[in-house]
Each structure stands twice: as C-alpha cells, then as structure tokens.
Length: 166
Image 1 (tube, one colour):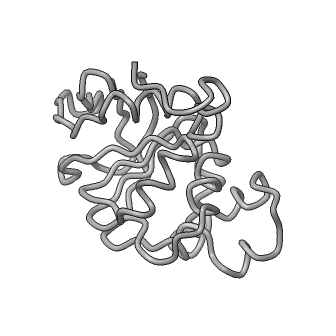
Image 2 (tube, rainbow, N blue to C red; image 1 turned 90 degrees about the vertical axis):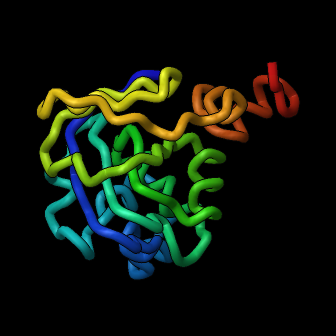
C-alpha cells in the first residue's frame, strides 16, 4: 500500500473531540457531513485546505479521549489517506484499523507542515520528498495490512467470512 500527500501538522494529545467536536458528531450520521468539521477546533479552515490523500501528522498520544468511531470515520471521509504520529491512544488505533484508516507511528519531529510525503506501508518507509529524507516507520503486521487493504474489518469479514491470516 503506497500513499502520497501533503502534511497538515498538529501537536501532542489531540483528542477525539478535537478530531470531531461533540457539537457535530451527535447531530448527524452522515460521515461526509462530519468530515467537513474534522479538526476545526484546532484549525477552523482545515477542511478547506485538504487535498485528497493528504496526511494528518501529530506528536504523541493522538486520538486520546472517547472511543467513538466517528473520529476515524470523519477522517476517512475527509479523504485523508493516513494519520502519522509518534504514538496513538490504543482504542483509537484499533478503531482506525477496524474502519480502514492507516496509522503510521514514527518520529514526526523531522516532518514539517506542507511537506510532501510518500509512504510505502509494506516496506516500512516514509519518504519526505520535500526534504529528501527517509524516515523509518513502525511496520504494521501483515494481517493489519490485509484488513486495511480490504477497507476495514467489516469488509475483510465479508470478503473472507472471518479472519484470513494467509
């Protein structure tokens, strides 16, 4: 799985209410509508700056807070290809894999806003095309890559009738 896009950078401890505010997530089940409000409490113009395939990059503990799946679903529906951070809240991490959103753990200190990145999830390498450097990423286990390639856990189960580890 190869990804390509531009960086939108945030800090540490970005909680799920910053990802999608409670004032929006309880008003609609339309994820395309929720996507228009992703990260708006941290950057009111965020959605208007996005191009399909862009990345959210952050520091440590991304996705802390409530465990609702609206946060990763809103990110997916904003056409963000992956979230890159030093670390993730564990339940958010699992929700992202289940919903089909790639998460990449690595040192994000060398990634700047607006940098252009290319990521090879299979090889475990992040290419910062703007700076001409490579950053090693924590590789995902093959079963997680398979689930992501299938579009999330539900789609994986539909395809295989259960977990497929081959």
